[in-house]
Length: 289
Image 1 (cartoon, rainbow, N blue to C red):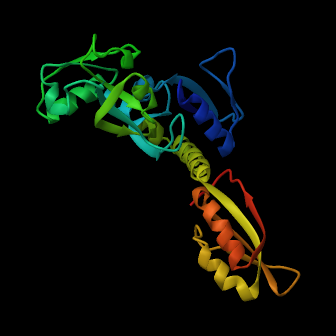
Image 2: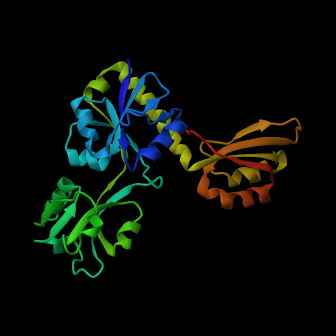
Image 3: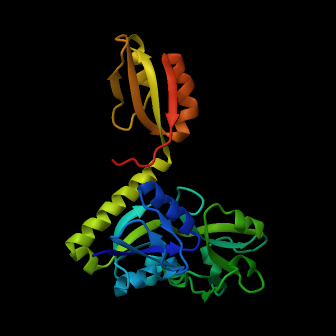
């Protein structure tokens, strides 16, 4: 028995493969480009476009898949969201579908879109957003190069962005956010009704989530004199509580903890000042809460 798992082909592929590597799975493309090899006989991996993943899961072509919450919403498919995983192509963050117009456009907000032409790949969600704002506009599906369409081919666009740099490079300005999106793990009812597949999927999600948690954290290890332990612990915002172990010298202890990587550059000088010695920072593969 094996779990048929869909992974996104395209912009999320590389970051997803790396996440799986840290979680313990090696996924390597083969000559059958849509069916990469994986070092787990209980997994059958299929690559599919994120836009199509929900339909394949709903139809039972695959049991579960990684895709964007935006495409699940756009598809309207009846699938179950098993987990939210906040990562994107360039970093550990959500992405946005934004309304953008040329820098010199007179369109200042959603109400100014009445009767205008909007190009986007996210047609259904955009139409729903316009309806919620009581605006009638012409929404056209864009087959690509959406940023290049205003002003000649469209008055505005709804486009996916992570940093906004591509829009700015095309002389477009963001005037509103339609929705935010992040990677999700989805499954069909049959998969979740099968005890073996459900357990396999839950175990996989736990380890992948652990690898994702580790992306923003590092381990810190240091030696501390017992007389200075209180001062050092006051600096550490430990994940749970630091691990403190006795050393061969009875006057010293080893302190081991996990912290947010972004805090380390300010924390290390404070730890040294508080009395920490032999401080070592090390990377993590997984952090499971």
